[in-house]
Image 1: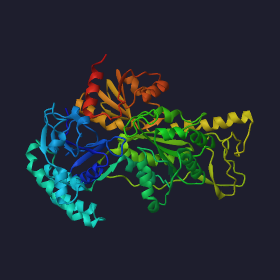
Image 2: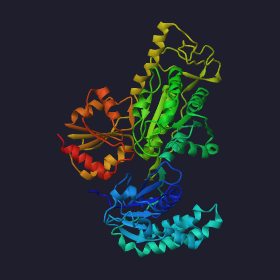
Image 3: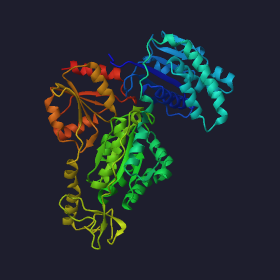
Image 4: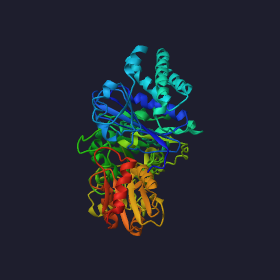
Length: 568
């Protein structure tokens, strides 16, 4: 049973109908009105003809994950219920043009409120105003002050002054209809003071802001959902923050451009998804042998091949861990909270620069497309570059004890900065000296010991004297945490990993303390569980795995955890 006073709203509409506008406008109005909110979307890979949904959860407590329950379902088109019927109950209030939903509701006990959005909008001037009517209806139901909504509509359409008046009329018509059915909604959360000044960020924005804060001044990528938003965001802010943004002709070009940029002294980012990252394997290996830093944002989606290009999955952990031929160090990070996306991206750039290795930041569609309000983010510390001014006899791959040969930049100093994709000597020149090959390889691998000194530990939530330990990584953080808190057992704890590889040395200690361990992942084979077994020798045999392309909801997570607790 949820301990949070909340209300769950789902918007359903046809792809290309403007549902994203409703989501964007409504969520910002709700925040300005003082509501905590969480929002995410689930959409088909069709420009038109598919059905898309946005889930919005509002509360008087801070919330940050998805629930299955639907209290209000607002439908803007025909055939907008089929994918949602399992989530609809007799308590769900369906707001739609009755003729659009009657057929699908035939065998279900649906409460239908007949509001013909498109007819109302057409009477005002254009069918497109239906979106603003919908915003007004929900504002009316939730008792949001109409003046707050009206002021934001004026701001939103400020660059289209001819559209402001009709959108205000559409908002008012919707608000009028919404106030008529307020009593149909049993409870609504109360506004909270101070929320209007919060930040409202999605995962994409957090990753992009974190890259900027980490000193990113070059991005080269080829568009691929769900990673493209980071490229778009940095491109929009390129002039303001001195970023060179390049949409490459393919993923191979993208990673090689980024490697070249790092070699020249820039801080470069590549953002991609699984299929694009697969093409970058040779470039990743190039960064490995040349000891060139690089940061890669890998936004996961279900594969193999094109798979489900607009859905979510944690299916590329092993791809990130093992890509690139040969043996060389790398670091894998995976933010759980939106705030982590901001801070870990900053850290990724520092780690790549400091240890001269690839750093891969793993997110997924659910993470990048979800957002909630947070109080603030800290401004970044002063950037520290880890390259040197070279002397005349500079050796790029000097065989020093910890393996971290000082990195020079061409033109900065008197030395020649030579790098090569072939095996090389200390000066960076090609060699087939096989004894030297061993020394250079060992030098590269010595970095792992240095990296282990700065690994972020996993975060333990719950009773330190636990008997059952839940283990998760990346975007499952909030849903596991809320489900565990709802269950309320004192012998239950949750261990979450933001730093995936190298694996933290205390992992075995945490697992051995528990009488029962449960791994939770959005993939079919428990990829993180296999990594833990490889490193600790401990097999986590209770697994909660989901791989249908959707994220876990709180209710199903509670159910899965309870079953695991009962299992022998």
